[in-house]
Length: 430
Image (cartoon, rainbow, N blue to C red):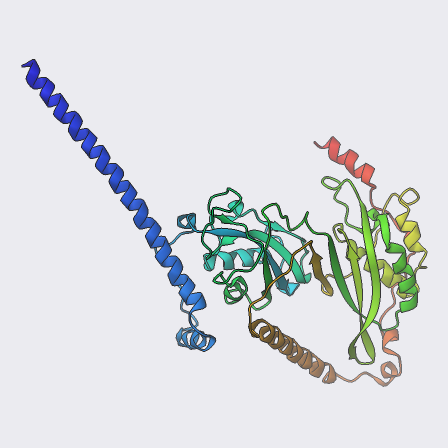
Protein backbone atom coordinates (compact mmCIF):
# COMPACT_ATOMS: atom_id res chain seq x y z
CA UNK A 1 0.00 0.00 0.00
CA UNK A 2 2.82 2.38 0.89
CA UNK A 3 4.54 1.52 -2.39
CA UNK A 4 1.38 2.43 -4.35
CA UNK A 5 1.08 5.79 -2.57
CA UNK A 6 4.72 6.52 -3.30
CA UNK A 7 4.18 5.79 -7.00
CA UNK A 8 1.15 8.11 -7.06
CA UNK A 9 3.17 10.91 -5.44
CA UNK A 10 5.98 10.48 -7.95
CA UNK A 11 3.52 10.59 -10.86
CA UNK A 12 1.94 13.78 -9.46
CA UNK A 13 5.34 15.41 -9.10
CA UNK A 14 6.26 14.47 -12.67
CA UNK A 15 2.94 15.88 -13.91
CA UNK A 16 3.43 19.12 -11.98
CA UNK A 17 6.97 19.48 -13.34
CA UNK A 18 5.72 18.86 -16.88
CA UNK A 19 2.95 21.43 -16.50
CA UNK A 20 5.35 24.02 -15.06
CA UNK A 21 7.73 23.49 -17.96
CA UNK A 22 4.84 23.88 -20.40
CA UNK A 23 3.71 27.09 -18.69
CA UNK A 24 7.23 28.51 -19.09
CA UNK A 25 7.23 27.53 -22.77
CA UNK A 26 3.87 29.24 -23.30
CA UNK A 27 5.02 32.39 -21.49
CA UNK A 28 8.12 32.54 -23.67
CA UNK A 29 6.02 32.02 -26.80
CA UNK A 30 3.59 34.73 -25.68
CA UNK A 31 6.45 37.17 -25.12
CA UNK A 32 7.70 36.48 -28.66
CA UNK A 33 4.24 37.04 -30.12
CA UNK A 34 3.82 40.34 -28.24
CA UNK A 35 7.23 41.45 -29.52
CA UNK A 36 6.32 40.50 -33.10
CA UNK A 37 2.96 42.26 -32.81
CA UNK A 38 4.60 45.49 -31.61
CA UNK A 39 7.20 45.25 -34.38
CA UNK A 40 4.51 44.75 -37.02
CA UNK A 41 2.56 47.79 -35.79
CA UNK A 42 5.75 49.86 -35.67
CA UNK A 43 6.59 48.95 -39.26
CA UNK A 44 3.05 49.76 -40.33
CA UNK A 45 3.34 53.17 -38.70
CA UNK A 46 6.75 53.69 -40.31
CA UNK A 47 5.36 52.83 -43.74
CA UNK A 48 2.50 55.25 -43.27
CA UNK A 49 4.86 58.04 -42.24
CA UNK A 50 7.62 57.40 -44.76
CA UNK A 51 6.03 55.44 -47.57
CA UNK A 52 3.44 57.56 -49.41
CA UNK A 53 4.56 60.65 -51.26
CA UNK A 54 3.13 64.05 -50.47
CA UNK A 55 0.53 63.79 -53.21
CA UNK A 56 -0.71 60.47 -51.89
CA UNK A 57 -0.95 61.89 -48.40
CA UNK A 58 -3.00 64.83 -49.65
CA UNK A 59 -5.42 62.58 -51.52
CA UNK A 60 -5.98 60.48 -48.42
CA UNK A 61 -6.57 63.59 -46.35
CA UNK A 62 -8.98 64.82 -48.99
CA UNK A 63 -11.09 61.66 -48.77
CA UNK A 64 -11.36 61.88 -44.99
CA UNK A 65 -14.29 63.80 -43.60
CA UNK A 66 -13.48 66.71 -41.35
CA UNK A 67 -15.39 65.16 -38.45
CA UNK A 68 -13.77 61.75 -38.71
CA UNK A 69 -11.44 60.72 -35.92
CA UNK A 70 -8.22 58.81 -36.49
CA UNK A 71 -8.50 55.70 -34.34
CA UNK A 72 -5.50 54.43 -32.42
CA UNK A 73 -4.22 51.04 -33.48
CA UNK A 74 -5.46 48.43 -31.01
CA UNK A 75 -2.83 46.50 -29.13
CA UNK A 76 -0.02 48.98 -29.84
CA UNK A 77 1.26 50.75 -26.75
CA UNK A 78 4.47 52.54 -25.99
CA UNK A 79 5.37 50.07 -23.28
CA UNK A 80 5.63 47.26 -25.89
CA UNK A 81 8.39 49.17 -27.68
CA UNK A 82 11.03 48.85 -25.00
CA UNK A 83 12.83 46.23 -27.11
CA UNK A 84 13.43 48.73 -29.93
CA UNK A 85 16.78 50.39 -30.53
CA UNK A 86 16.93 53.96 -29.29
CA UNK A 87 19.42 56.78 -29.50
CA UNK A 88 19.95 60.05 -27.68
CA UNK A 89 19.39 63.02 -29.98
CA UNK A 90 18.95 66.80 -29.86
CA UNK A 91 16.11 68.47 -31.76
CA UNK A 92 16.19 72.08 -32.95
CA UNK A 93 12.69 73.54 -32.61
CA UNK A 94 10.94 76.57 -34.11
CA UNK A 95 7.60 77.86 -32.84
CA UNK A 96 5.42 80.96 -33.16
CA UNK A 97 4.48 81.64 -29.57
CA UNK A 98 1.33 83.72 -29.90
CA UNK A 99 -1.21 81.00 -29.01
CA UNK A 100 0.91 79.06 -26.50
CA UNK A 101 1.05 79.42 -22.73
CA UNK A 102 4.82 79.20 -22.77
CA UNK A 103 7.14 76.40 -23.80
CA UNK A 104 7.21 74.16 -20.70
CA UNK A 105 4.33 71.74 -20.18
CA UNK A 106 4.47 72.30 -16.40
CA UNK A 107 2.36 75.41 -16.97
CA UNK A 108 -1.17 75.24 -15.62
CA UNK A 109 -2.66 76.28 -18.95
CA UNK A 110 -2.84 74.54 -22.32
CA UNK A 111 -1.63 74.44 -24.98
CA UNK A 112 2.11 74.65 -24.46
CA UNK A 113 4.77 74.01 -27.09
CA UNK A 114 6.21 71.12 -25.11
CA UNK A 115 2.85 69.37 -24.75
CA UNK A 116 2.33 69.57 -28.53
CA UNK A 117 5.79 68.11 -29.16
CA UNK A 118 5.13 65.14 -26.87
CA UNK A 119 1.75 64.54 -28.51
CA UNK A 120 3.59 64.31 -31.83
CA UNK A 121 6.23 61.98 -30.37
CA UNK A 122 3.54 59.64 -29.03
CA UNK A 123 1.51 59.77 -32.24
CA UNK A 124 4.54 58.81 -34.33
CA UNK A 125 5.62 56.14 -31.82
CA UNK A 126 9.08 57.71 -31.59
CA UNK A 127 8.99 57.86 -27.80
CA UNK A 128 10.32 54.69 -26.18
CA UNK A 129 8.67 54.23 -22.82
CA UNK A 130 7.35 57.43 -21.25
CA UNK A 131 8.75 60.91 -20.78
CA UNK A 132 10.49 60.22 -17.49
CA UNK A 133 12.44 57.38 -19.14
CA UNK A 134 13.52 59.54 -22.09
CA UNK A 135 16.17 61.62 -20.23
CA UNK A 136 14.44 64.73 -21.55
CA UNK A 137 15.96 68.21 -21.19
CA UNK A 138 15.22 71.62 -22.69
CA UNK A 139 17.57 74.56 -23.29
CA UNK A 140 15.27 77.53 -22.67
CA UNK A 141 11.94 77.92 -20.91
CA UNK A 142 10.28 80.71 -22.86
CA UNK A 143 7.21 82.43 -21.43
CA UNK A 144 3.69 82.82 -22.77
CA UNK A 145 3.67 84.45 -26.21
CA UNK A 146 7.45 84.25 -26.78
CA UNK A 147 8.62 82.64 -30.03
CA UNK A 148 11.76 80.73 -31.00
CA UNK A 149 13.63 79.66 -34.11
CA UNK A 150 16.48 77.94 -32.28
CA UNK A 151 15.09 76.21 -29.18
CA UNK A 152 16.81 72.88 -28.41
CA UNK A 153 15.57 69.79 -26.58
CA UNK A 154 17.25 66.41 -26.07
CA UNK A 155 15.84 62.95 -25.38
CA UNK A 156 16.00 59.26 -26.30
CA UNK A 157 13.97 58.37 -29.39
CA UNK A 158 13.39 55.17 -31.31
CA UNK A 159 16.04 54.33 -33.91
CA UNK A 160 16.11 52.19 -37.06
CA UNK A 161 19.74 51.29 -36.48
CA UNK A 162 20.72 47.91 -35.13
CA UNK A 163 21.85 47.68 -31.54
CA UNK A 164 25.64 47.45 -31.55
CA UNK A 165 27.91 45.79 -29.04
CA UNK A 166 30.07 48.89 -29.30
CA UNK A 167 27.55 50.94 -27.36
CA UNK A 168 28.21 52.38 -23.93
CA UNK A 169 26.86 49.34 -22.13
CA UNK A 170 23.23 50.43 -21.87
CA UNK A 171 21.12 47.78 -23.60
CA UNK A 172 19.22 48.98 -26.65
CA UNK A 173 20.78 52.45 -26.67
CA UNK A 174 22.59 53.69 -29.77
CA UNK A 175 24.95 56.56 -29.04
CA UNK A 176 26.55 57.32 -32.39
CA UNK A 177 28.00 60.70 -33.26
CA UNK A 178 27.35 60.74 -36.99
CA UNK A 179 24.61 60.34 -39.56
CA UNK A 180 23.82 56.81 -40.69
CA UNK A 181 21.82 55.80 -43.75
CA UNK A 182 18.54 54.12 -42.95
CA UNK A 183 17.92 56.16 -39.81
CA UNK A 184 14.48 57.61 -39.13
CA UNK A 185 13.98 61.03 -40.70
CA UNK A 186 12.97 62.66 -37.42
CA UNK A 187 12.40 66.08 -39.00
CA UNK A 188 10.08 64.81 -41.72
CA UNK A 189 8.18 62.38 -39.48
CA UNK A 190 7.48 64.90 -36.70
CA UNK A 191 6.67 67.85 -38.96
CA UNK A 192 3.92 65.82 -40.63
CA UNK A 193 1.95 65.67 -37.39
CA UNK A 194 2.96 68.89 -35.58
CA UNK A 195 0.74 72.02 -35.72
CA UNK A 196 1.65 74.55 -38.42
CA UNK A 197 3.15 76.97 -35.88
CA UNK A 198 5.68 74.41 -34.56
CA UNK A 199 8.43 72.90 -36.69
CA UNK A 200 11.46 70.71 -36.09
CA UNK A 201 14.33 72.48 -37.88
CA UNK A 202 16.96 69.76 -37.48
CA UNK A 203 18.35 66.93 -35.35
CA UNK A 204 21.74 65.71 -34.21
CA UNK A 205 23.01 62.65 -32.31
CA UNK A 206 24.46 63.67 -28.94
CA UNK A 207 26.41 61.84 -26.19
CA UNK A 208 24.36 60.48 -23.29
CA UNK A 209 25.85 63.03 -20.87
CA UNK A 210 24.52 65.89 -23.03
CA UNK A 211 22.03 68.23 -21.33
CA UNK A 212 20.14 70.79 -23.42
CA UNK A 213 20.30 73.39 -20.65
CA UNK A 214 23.61 72.82 -18.89
CA UNK A 215 25.62 71.91 -22.01
CA UNK A 216 24.61 75.17 -23.71
CA UNK A 217 27.53 77.57 -24.22
CA UNK A 218 25.48 80.65 -25.13
CA UNK A 219 22.02 81.82 -26.09
CA UNK A 220 20.95 84.64 -28.38
CA UNK A 221 17.65 86.51 -28.19
CA UNK A 222 16.19 89.00 -30.64
CA UNK A 223 13.65 91.67 -29.81
CA UNK A 224 11.89 93.49 -32.68
CA UNK A 225 10.48 97.03 -32.37
CA UNK A 226 9.41 99.99 -34.50
CA UNK A 227 11.85 102.90 -34.45
CA UNK A 228 9.22 105.68 -34.54
CA UNK A 229 10.68 108.60 -32.53
CA UNK A 230 13.11 106.59 -30.42
CA UNK A 231 16.64 107.91 -30.02
CA UNK A 232 18.62 104.89 -31.25
CA UNK A 233 22.01 106.48 -30.45
CA UNK A 234 21.01 106.96 -26.80
CA UNK A 235 19.71 103.40 -26.67
CA UNK A 236 22.98 102.07 -28.10
CA UNK A 237 24.95 104.04 -25.53
CA UNK A 238 22.85 102.53 -22.75
CA UNK A 239 22.98 99.01 -24.25
CA UNK A 240 26.79 98.93 -24.15
CA UNK A 241 26.63 99.20 -20.36
CA UNK A 242 24.97 95.74 -20.21
CA UNK A 243 27.97 94.01 -21.81
CA UNK A 244 30.11 92.07 -19.35
CA UNK A 245 29.34 90.25 -16.11
CA UNK A 246 26.90 92.07 -13.83
CA UNK A 247 24.32 91.46 -11.14
CA UNK A 248 21.01 91.72 -13.04
CA UNK A 249 18.61 91.43 -10.10
CA UNK A 250 17.14 94.84 -11.01
CA UNK A 251 16.52 93.61 -14.57
CA UNK A 252 14.51 90.43 -13.95
CA UNK A 253 11.60 88.89 -12.13
CA UNK A 254 13.26 87.67 -8.96
CA UNK A 255 12.76 84.04 -7.89
CA UNK A 256 14.41 84.17 -4.47
CA UNK A 257 13.18 80.70 -3.51
CA UNK A 258 15.16 78.98 -6.29
CA UNK A 259 17.70 81.46 -7.69
CA UNK A 260 20.47 82.76 -5.44
CA UNK A 261 23.03 84.01 -7.95
CA UNK A 262 21.92 86.88 -10.17
CA UNK A 263 25.22 87.49 -11.89
CA UNK A 264 25.09 86.84 -15.63
CA UNK A 265 27.47 87.57 -18.51
CA UNK A 266 26.30 89.44 -21.61
CA UNK A 267 28.79 89.00 -24.46
CA UNK A 268 27.11 91.26 -27.06
CA UNK A 269 24.23 93.73 -27.18
CA UNK A 270 23.47 95.30 -30.58
CA UNK A 271 20.67 97.39 -32.06
CA UNK A 272 20.31 97.38 -35.84
CA UNK A 273 17.71 98.29 -38.50
CA UNK A 274 15.96 95.76 -40.73
CA UNK A 275 14.69 96.17 -44.30
CA UNK A 276 11.05 96.34 -43.18
CA UNK A 277 9.18 99.64 -43.02
CA UNK A 278 5.56 100.57 -42.32
CA UNK A 279 4.03 104.04 -42.63
CA UNK A 280 7.44 105.70 -42.52
CA UNK A 281 8.69 103.80 -39.47
CA UNK A 282 11.54 101.32 -39.70
CA UNK A 283 11.54 97.94 -37.99
CA UNK A 284 14.61 97.50 -35.77
CA UNK A 285 15.96 94.58 -33.80
CA UNK A 286 17.88 94.18 -30.55
CA UNK A 287 20.30 91.23 -30.57
CA UNK A 288 21.46 90.02 -27.16
CA UNK A 289 23.89 87.17 -26.60
CA UNK A 290 24.87 85.75 -23.23
CA UNK A 291 25.81 82.57 -21.43
CA UNK A 292 22.48 82.41 -19.59
CA UNK A 293 19.54 84.66 -18.73
CA UNK A 294 17.34 85.26 -15.71
CA UNK A 295 13.55 85.11 -15.70
CA UNK A 296 12.20 88.02 -17.84
CA UNK A 297 15.69 89.52 -18.04
CA UNK A 298 15.56 90.44 -21.74
CA UNK A 299 12.13 92.06 -21.49
CA UNK A 300 13.21 94.10 -18.45
CA UNK A 301 16.41 95.32 -20.14
CA UNK A 302 14.48 96.30 -23.28
CA UNK A 303 11.83 98.13 -21.21
CA UNK A 304 14.46 100.40 -19.64
CA UNK A 305 16.12 100.92 -23.03
CA UNK A 306 12.79 102.16 -24.41
CA UNK A 307 12.63 104.71 -21.58
CA UNK A 308 16.09 105.90 -22.61
CA UNK A 309 15.08 106.00 -26.28
CA UNK A 310 12.06 108.16 -25.45
CA UNK A 311 14.22 110.61 -23.52
CA UNK A 312 12.52 109.73 -20.23
CA UNK A 313 15.69 108.33 -18.64
CA UNK A 314 19.42 108.96 -19.06
CA UNK A 315 21.67 106.13 -20.33
CA UNK A 316 23.40 106.40 -16.93
CA UNK A 317 20.33 104.83 -15.30
CA UNK A 318 21.72 101.46 -16.45
CA UNK A 319 24.85 102.02 -14.35
CA UNK A 320 22.76 102.86 -11.31
CA UNK A 321 20.51 99.80 -11.64
CA UNK A 322 23.49 97.49 -12.13
CA UNK A 323 24.99 98.81 -8.87
CA UNK A 324 23.06 96.57 -6.48
CA UNK A 325 24.95 97.90 -3.47
CA UNK A 326 23.54 101.32 -4.21
CA UNK A 327 20.16 100.12 -5.53
CA UNK A 328 19.38 96.83 -3.73
CA UNK A 329 15.64 97.04 -4.50
CA UNK A 330 14.29 97.00 -8.05
CA UNK A 331 12.13 100.05 -8.97
CA UNK A 332 8.68 99.05 -10.15
CA UNK A 333 8.29 99.23 -13.92
CA UNK A 334 6.40 97.35 -16.61
CA UNK A 335 8.55 95.05 -18.71
CA UNK A 336 8.39 95.08 -22.51
CA UNK A 337 5.80 93.03 -24.39
CA UNK A 338 6.49 89.33 -24.93
CA UNK A 339 5.22 89.23 -28.55
CA UNK A 340 8.34 90.62 -30.35
CA UNK A 341 10.76 88.42 -28.35
CA UNK A 342 12.44 85.47 -30.11
CA UNK A 343 14.87 82.86 -28.82
CA UNK A 344 17.15 83.01 -31.83
CA UNK A 345 19.78 80.35 -31.16
CA UNK A 346 21.36 78.06 -28.58
CA UNK A 347 25.02 77.24 -29.14
CA UNK A 348 26.72 73.96 -28.19
CA UNK A 349 30.15 72.43 -28.69
CA UNK A 350 30.41 70.06 -31.68
CA UNK A 351 26.66 70.02 -32.36
CA UNK A 352 25.68 70.31 -36.03
CA UNK A 353 22.00 69.92 -36.78
CA UNK A 354 20.90 68.00 -39.85
CA UNK A 355 17.67 68.57 -41.75
CA UNK A 356 15.72 66.49 -44.25
CA UNK A 357 16.75 66.68 -47.90
CA UNK A 358 14.35 68.61 -50.09
CA UNK A 359 12.39 71.83 -49.75
CA UNK A 360 9.40 70.71 -47.66
CA UNK A 361 10.39 72.64 -44.52
CA UNK A 362 11.38 75.79 -46.40
CA UNK A 363 8.17 75.71 -48.47
CA UNK A 364 6.05 75.33 -45.32
CA UNK A 365 7.71 78.30 -43.61
CA UNK A 366 7.38 80.42 -46.77
CA UNK A 367 3.67 79.56 -46.95
CA UNK A 368 3.22 80.58 -43.31
CA UNK A 369 4.92 83.92 -44.07
CA UNK A 370 2.46 84.53 -46.89
CA UNK A 371 -0.50 83.70 -44.64
CA UNK A 372 0.61 86.25 -42.03
CA UNK A 373 1.27 88.84 -44.74
CA UNK A 374 -2.28 88.33 -45.99
CA UNK A 375 -3.58 88.87 -42.47
CA UNK A 376 -1.50 92.05 -42.19
CA UNK A 377 -2.99 93.25 -45.50
CA UNK A 378 -6.51 92.75 -44.12
CA UNK A 379 -5.71 94.76 -40.98
CA UNK A 380 -4.14 97.47 -43.16
CA UNK A 381 -7.33 97.56 -45.23
CA UNK A 382 -9.29 98.04 -42.01
CA UNK A 383 -7.04 100.98 -41.09
CA UNK A 384 -7.78 102.61 -44.46
CA UNK A 385 -11.51 102.18 -43.88
CA UNK A 386 -11.62 103.74 -40.42
CA UNK A 387 -13.97 106.68 -39.86
CA UNK A 388 -12.08 109.85 -40.91
CA UNK A 389 -10.76 112.08 -38.16
CA UNK A 390 -12.30 115.46 -37.51
CA UNK A 391 -10.58 118.55 -38.92
CA UNK A 392 -9.20 119.45 -35.48
CA UNK A 393 -7.77 115.96 -34.94
CA UNK A 394 -6.37 115.55 -38.45
CA UNK A 395 -4.20 118.62 -38.03
CA UNK A 396 -2.41 117.05 -35.06
CA UNK A 397 0.52 114.65 -35.40
CA UNK A 398 -0.42 111.04 -34.56
CA UNK A 399 1.90 111.07 -31.56
CA UNK A 400 0.07 114.03 -30.05
CA UNK A 401 -3.32 112.33 -30.38
CA UNK A 402 -2.17 109.69 -27.90
CA UNK A 403 -2.54 110.80 -24.32
CA UNK A 404 0.89 111.10 -22.77
CA UNK A 405 1.19 109.46 -19.37
CA UNK A 406 3.32 111.38 -16.93
CA UNK A 407 6.64 109.63 -16.42
CA UNK A 408 7.95 109.03 -12.92
CA UNK A 409 11.75 108.67 -12.89
CA UNK A 410 12.88 105.15 -12.05
CA UNK A 411 14.90 106.31 -9.07
CA UNK A 412 11.77 107.97 -7.61
CA UNK A 413 9.45 105.00 -7.94
CA UNK A 414 8.28 102.53 -5.28
CA UNK A 415 10.57 99.52 -5.08
CA UNK A 416 10.13 95.76 -4.82
CA UNK A 417 11.53 93.79 -1.86
CA UNK A 418 15.24 93.04 -2.05
CA UNK A 419 16.61 89.52 -2.41
CA UNK A 420 17.53 89.44 1.29
CA UNK A 421 14.04 90.52 2.30
CA UNK A 422 12.45 87.91 0.04
CA UNK A 423 14.69 85.17 1.46
CA UNK A 424 13.90 86.19 5.03
CA UNK A 425 10.17 86.02 4.29
CA UNK A 426 10.58 82.68 2.52
CA UNK A 427 12.55 81.20 5.43
CA UNK A 428 10.00 82.42 7.97
CA UNK A 429 7.23 80.63 6.07
CA UNK A 430 9.07 77.30 5.83
